[in-house]
Length: 570
Image 1 (tube, rainbow, N blue to C red):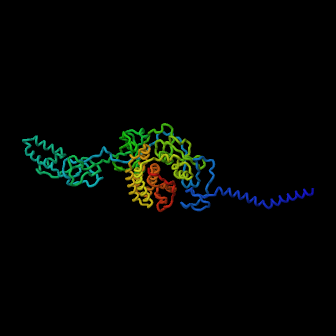
Image 2: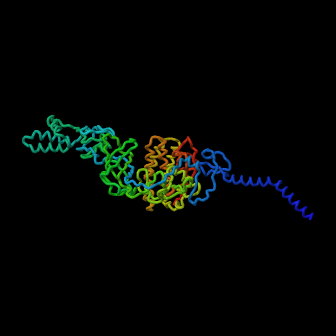
Image 3: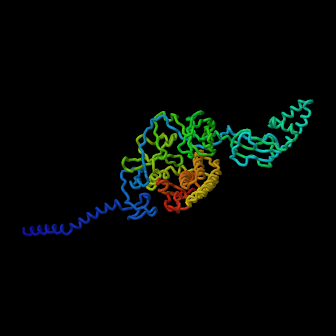
């Protein structure tokens, strides 16, 4: 019995000593495990603007120099296409969302883009009434204003000299041969000589060698068709003139919009040249045929231009109201929410209310009404979509490997097989684009204008008949029109800031062109999150090195390569 008591006592002493000796170790182990769990939540440090940066300790972003922040991990409960963004990233990129709803209004305006052209109904060609040599020309340059009755030119006319001699002979015989005399005078009248001029010849009995040409209408000289010393024939044009007191606004209307217009309809026209002013125009002509290349119909509206405010070639916008476009209830979303890639239109939807979780959705667009699109399919009333900072959200989706505008399972299938000849022509367009980019990197607006002109010339040399695929033909036609307008705007803009903003539009659409059709070399698609007022902007480069065209020397190295585009020659 005593033996058992000794064993029990030893066991109790062992328990007490073990608790005393190892309790600290157990506590330390628990603390260590807890710390590991805490560390796992902040194991990596990232940049709010460049979430692909992952470092094991805090510091500065190697791309933009901003302070790194703890990375969030464990987005449990998200579907395969959903992704989460940090609140800091959303705030820095100024990402904004809007809950869409049904628009019950029945009178939504439709906005068109167009330009001013001369009213062809008022164009005239001032012709020579007799053959001869131009001795003097009183109009020295195009654009000069001419008044009716103004002296335009003098002509040495051998046939008119001979006719004057016949007049003097017939005048001496008018008593005996009145019919001959009358016939000679009528002959001179056919050459547009006035009664007064004929009487002066007859009274002075002198033959004039040089005869004047007077303007028969008032207008502005559009073209000088002759120079001093040229020989002209009877009826040959001397000057082409236009009366700019009335001009046309020419608009492009897409096929799905044709039914919305009719002759006599009123359009409200605006121009950047006169901010805040609205001008009334009336539709006078709708082209009965669709342009097979651009798939648009030309619409012309007449504008009174007594004050000569509108100049041919000026860009304008037109808004047509009271079209009753939305007889049925329809969903409208801001145009800023829509991204395009190839034939697809996409938006980003906020998947969870209150949480920064997003997902890309494909949509089918209807007509554009003002600054909004009608949604035919893809978005329902009550859905919350991204309306500002869409490119930043798309970039985040790409970096996290989620479905995005440029990272889609159908993107490879949507590229087109094109000939090597077409790619060579497109290569010239790409090369001139790179020179525009380089000019903006140098902050050289004059050089950017010149290279934009070259870009447009090379674009016009692309032979779309080489595209045998009908869908490829349609895609090229749509993209080519935007590229042309963007390059023309860069060529006409006067500040480097405006040029850079338009370069963003040019880049977005050229990226689509290169991805769809390909070129003869590798292109680097690069991205700066701070461009476009911190909304982000893309551009293309021939090299991996970052040279930012949106900031130049101010932030030359800001940006990163988002995608390497490499098509093989077919």
